[in-house]
Length: 452
Image (tube, rainbow, N blue to C red; front, side, top):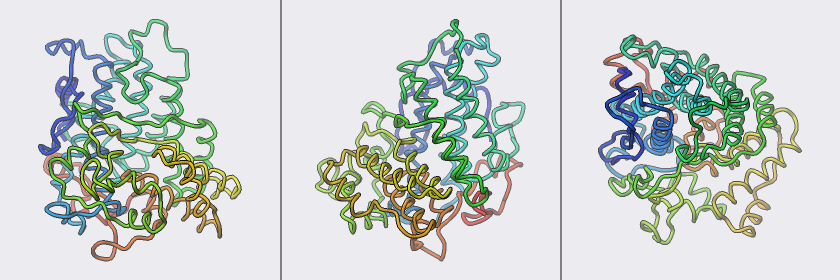
């Protein structure tokens, strides 16, 4: 893994996404003085890092996990093979490089600049945001690969073969980063801060309260992942839900100048079919969100293509939404014995999803009347919650986590007897990092720590 400090100089230019057909990162933008690393400042690093995160998630990360969760299937070429769970190490090089070299390295640089740079202590707001987004990125990464480099990943030439941290320790780091971000952003920021984020923060435009709320919701997300191995997981998730309250949807806004990754993929490759089990079940239930997810009449692309909500050039990538937070609340309350509270949160979650996708009130009410009442024992109620979360979180990698830890929804594998449970490590890691574990790993083993 060739993480080095020269990448920091290169990646300060990251703002506008380049062609996905070239399968590269999100590399283009501005800087104040390209010949002077001392001019690299958080307001330059933050927007590119946010864009790279959204590009990685909305690109290969979403497409690959959407095969597992049966949001999509492959029509031709590579994606037909992917639908049969035929992946190679090479398939994961680009997404790995995007999350490390183009994303986490910049978040780490912001944190280091505020800690030890020439302007140490002058960028606390950026520091808090960077910690929250670092937690998000290592969380997304460990949830697909398991053990990953983190504690030694950003030491440059001092360590070109960083050790892999166990997934258990990565999860501890996630919670620590989120706690640190909350503490920093909740405190009295120094009056002499050099700058505070504004329009360079593409997600929340510098609204620190929104970042604090997101951090609490992310704590709940990563606690609820541990329900198979930690008896306190649901209680911890619920405590974080209660501490944070409702969130503003965390969306990254792409533009026609730097188009959404799904738009680019359809425009350039278009070898995916949007007819997976999720969409089939939505059709069977007359789910009103179907006509948002899919371009039914060909108004934007062609009949049957991905809808403009997800695949217009300026469609946002959703990192976390209020409806996801409410589904976590519903599950946590049911697991802790509060089925009545779980029912209330469940109904609110479905309604929040309908509102997010612009569904008419009467259509939402009809759907909720038919599908919004929990029944049966705890496991049956959780299955209902995860099903509706699966539908609402369309194309989001989070759904693969829910599928693995709960077994819901019940899906028939496309090939063989089992849906894959992990990504394999990329070629470049095997070739260049002698610390890479599991040299003979597959997409089924070793099992992730939280899924045992």
